Image 1 (cartoon, rainbow, N blue to C red):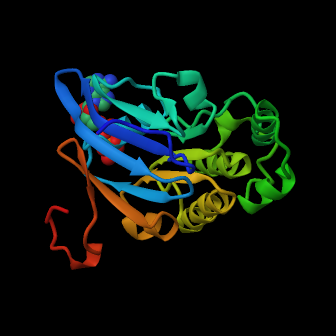
Image 2: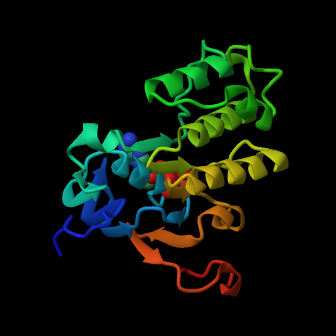
Image 3: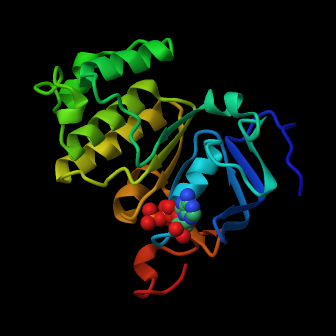
Amino acid sequence: MSLTTSSTEVPAVQLRGIWLRLGRDAVLRGLDLDVQAGEAVTLLGRNGAGKSTLLRLIASALSSTRGEGRIFGYDLNDRRAVRDHIHLLGHDLGLYPDLTPRENLAFALKMHAQVGNIDTALERADLTRAAERRVRFLSAGMKKRLALTRLALLSRPLILVDEPFANLDAEGRELAIALMGQAKAAGSTLIVAAHEPELSLRVAPRALVLEDGQLLEHGRPLEHRQPGEKA
Ligand SMILES: Nc1ncnc2c1ncn2[C@@H]1O[C@H](COP(=O)(O)OP(=O)(O)OP(=O)(O)O)[C@@H](O)[C@H]1O
């Protein structure tokens, strides 16, 4: 099936027959995906299944070997247009280590010609006392809180988050859910790759499982599965 942009509501993500090879292995193998604007999806799958690879493909940071894709109607090869719609929070958090948390947030808002209450955002993330320290001196969890705070402040049209709960304490994990929820409430579409479905599904309730290079719609609640059983 070929892609169309003729409907009035342009889908956030449309992928058709995507193959992507890294090294000797085909990580994505004829993968299809449709995500409607405003939807929130949890992407599940084992270590090495290809979740990060798929997020990077959608962010146009990786090119497919075969297949086609559109992001809000823009061809994936139109990288500039795609990136104008996307915020990818990957393993590399994309923070400026020699700037402070306050400066990182101010710079991000300025780059996107947006305004936001930085003091309130820092306080919510329990980063007020660290607001004037250089990011390189923050702990891994503090950096993650800052990156999630930036994500919520910007609320870009399509937000891709790779392992939002990694490095966070219990309070930080709740903050992550709240901040992603804030972006969703502001109209962002979310795709969240996570190993903690019980947390991620609270904010991104459509579960997809990446397995053998393809996506499976999760047919049954996780609690009905046997340990080790495939989706
Ligand atoms: N630059 C690369 N060159 C070659 N192979 C790579 C490269 N990056 C990733 N891979 C391989 O692609 C596969 C998918 O990796 P990916 O990081 O997308 O998986 P993942 O589902 O995000 O894993 P995890 O849950 O462990 O984070 C793995 O087999 C990995 O070894």
